[in-house]
Length: 50
Picture 1 (tube, rainbow, N blue to C red):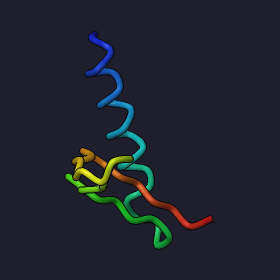
Picture 2: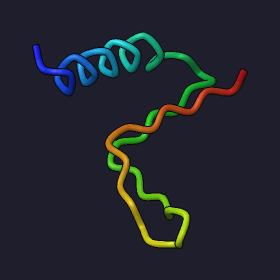
Picture 3: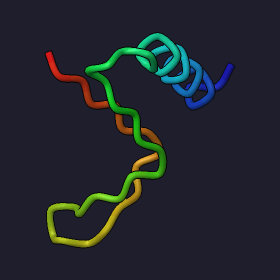
Picture 4: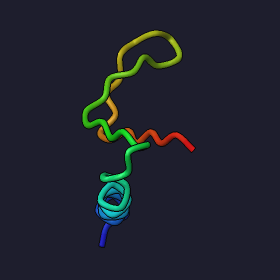
């Protein structure tokens, strides 16, 4: 299995585990500015309040 596919599988498992947690927000295709202010797209962003 290629590294990228293995990584994607791991992220899916994490997302499935956390998706029902009330303290977790999962964003797909999230846009964020990089260090020089240009917009970049992140495939998945998982934010959890601890």
